[in-house]
Amino acid sequence: NAGVMQNPRHLVRRRGQEARLRCSPMKGHSHVYWYRQLPEEGLKFMVYLQKENIIDESGMPKERFSAEFPKEGPSILRIQQVVRGDSAAYFCASSLVGTSGSGNEQFFGPGTRLTVL
Amino acid sequence: KQEVTQIPAALSVPEGENLVLNCSFTDSAIYNLQWFRQDPGKGLTSLLLIQSSQREQTSGRLNASLDKSSGRSTLYIAASQPGDSATYLCAVNFGNEKLTFGTGTRLTIIP
Image (tube, rainbow over all chains, first blue to last red; front, side, top):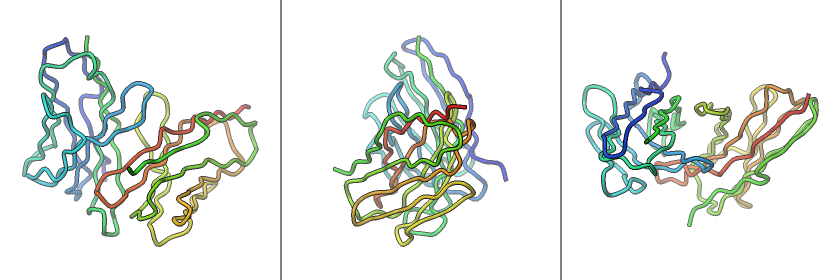
């Protein structure tokens, strides 16, 4: 059973371009979470999704950032018109169930390191 | 506000010693707590998960404890090895479907 997959592993963009980060959860997992780790800072929650639904986006900036988890295919974190402050490591995690059930452990992918020039 | 704190930020110990990493959290109504390891430039590896109803979990040389009433968890590493050098992260699920992370303890094992 493959773990959480993220691609690309490294992404370089110039200011004003768009960044698309992809996450394939573990097989059978329908809960996906995105976290951001800024340089020299801890991981911060961004958004929690289930298939075709955004459950909690309280940690995501209101502008330029969006996320989706379609019925088919990976979850996508999209950053429009990137700025230098968006440079960070973006991690995706998945879980089998939500908070209250057994199997609520979150498994993390290797991350995508975004560099904005 | 729900917060997670890890002290110290960095720790160096000689190889072979046992050591304890600390994690404290502000709200005792938690669902679970996870300890992770992160190597430089790498992703997170889950080490141990403790559910709110449990007091400890063990895996090999690692033992994690949970005391909800005092808002504390510890990660005990026995017989430390140079390969244990990494940043250790504590993350708490306060029941709102997301993990709140501490800023980590950077551990260096001196050969």
